[in-house]
Image (tube, rainbow, N blue to C red; front, side, top):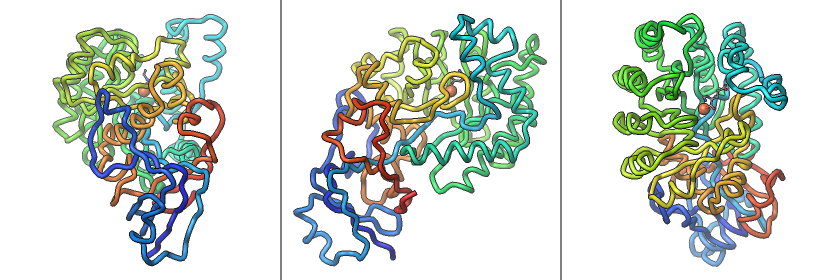
Length: 414
Ligand code: NIG
Ligand code: FE
């Protein structure tokens, strides 16, 4: 058995004996131990406590001891919403937007999601795998210890399957938990612009059976917005996905409130993601449901949109998580540290709320709460060791500075 003892941790953050999805005022409760020790055995958290209990709890010290004086130790971030697999970045559209072009102008030129889809279909599976692995390695160094990745830049049978096969290979290659989401309903491809039903039929009859047979996805997703997929279309697609065991995890209410939340809750969706545009009924419905609201503030930042109403959602008792939405169009960064800083700076979340939303609640949003999201005995030792800092609030306060000193995955420093 390999044992590691970490001692003199300035603060051991998000220590929990019991797991629960946090709502309302509970989100601000971030339990921590000052001057703590942490015992890791075979990559799993075996024990922890204040230093004064060390002798009693760990009478025989292991050979491998790490001194973490001045450092904070946190569970790694769970990034429950990304589009990590893509063929090409889109900085030319970024420049077009700076010069004043609207999203609609860019789409009319064949830009946006369709631009990404065209290049993805021309790109070899191995090249997609290589670039996605490079990105994922970088994210792990920034503290991401579990990730969800979507398809959705294929929009053809071959393209969607290619993306999902890349995600399956990433699952095999990396030692962090990865969840795969099937998002063929991202936009209507040009070929089906005037025949939506035919594209929905393609998703249901040509894509889903292969995805199920090859076990390529955990979840099904749909971009439910005006000009994209209606709530009714989303329900049809999700019901088909659910018949293969894929739970809905959905893009709703980024641009419009058109009933996506209501439909998602009816479908018992695991999460509803984006939520820039929420009316009172949407907030109340979400609060009364088991569905998690996942906020993607870096997408609002990058697109210069209004931020998600985090305070209203928390004050109304909704369960919320935070994720990066890493993708080439609306959030070309998967840095969860910046997501947390932005949540505090622009959405007025307390540092404790943001950290809970990006760890324990985010673990729930990808069904990993039994293995990740908190410092708990039996969970994976996927941990962030910060650089020495004066306080936990310094982490979001000092935005743009990398305060992650080291990241441990399954008990081993990367
Ligand atoms: O979640 N809005 C839908 N999908 C992505 C962005 C897609 C793109 O522009 O490539 C998102 O923000
Ligand atoms: Fe997204």
